[in-house]
Length: 337
Length: 99
Ligand SMILES: [Fe+2]
Ligand SMILES: [Fe+2]
Image 1: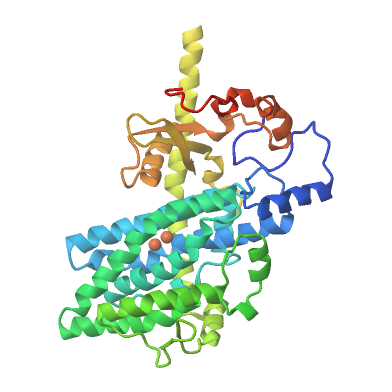
Image 2 (image 1 turned 90 degrees about the horizontal axis):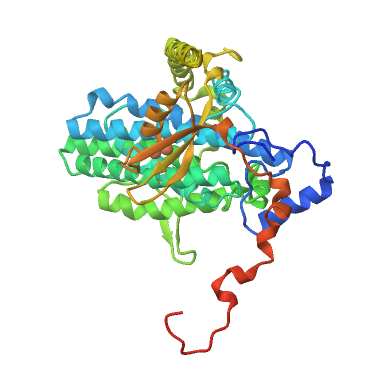
């Protein structure tokens, strides 16, 4: 009964007899069925733990890699207002990464280990961040479409069966809506600006639309992990369902922007009460996933370099903490003497 | 790069934030930091970017003693069979006011 908080290794008090596997599984299944949350020190199937580590680590990595394409424009933001907004947004993404790394650590892995795996290319981040930000309008398109797609994915994750993941998602979703709105406002300003600015906005939307649809993952029939994740209530809706929800939201928003979406097959389907969209080029998705997107190498190199450049800061902080702790110990000794 | 980065030595801290005066501190999350001062600064940047707090506590995670989930039932059993501790246990005739 003297184990510590959430972040300790999972398990039982040493004195308790090991409960029977079937009972543990039954208790877990009941909790999932009853929609109560699974918490870090509860027993959980190994595959459930492994799935969460994979998904949450990928999510955390995406947040911090996702800082790069937008940070690319901070120094060239067209006004102080836009610069302050963009810095706040990129800082939020760093925060999202940290919430998610610490939530993942409750599963018994360490952040250092997850970062090592990212740097070694052994864990993924979202493919969307392997596309370049060619113009200022890309910052708007990312906020509107990429953050928009992320929100569509993430809102149901607030009810994920794993407590720490769900709690992190609640925080993140609260912060995301500013991301999407600033992007939309930025695009609106460009769209209503000069003909050149309007064209720039349209070009950015043309380039980001399809990759944003791919963010929801493969079609339902092709998705390797979906069924099990749904059964575990990690996932609440299928990839295609969420993608459709996103398309239906975006079409009227694009109309207000005065921009078009680059899909000639996009049209309202009265019988479904939804928009039909054209076929997604999954071969492109697979290529980017395989590492052959426009920026895969650049993103990882940049991340590794940033980590290495931060080594001296981490070392200095650790040395300072150690010295300070030693000084305090000495002061205590002297006081006692 | 694996294994012995200096960050391995950075302990974990639990962060508690008081949202505004009059409220108690509640658990916001956790973070790694080399010492208490850095933990406070990091907590400010991580958990109060939108003025979510007027006061922060940081506590080393290892300093927390928790009840064991396995003992959930016996540990809390003393409270389970005492419904008379709740006001709804008592039947009061209709029409009696301020009770
Ligand atoms: Fe984010
Ligand atoms: Fe975001």
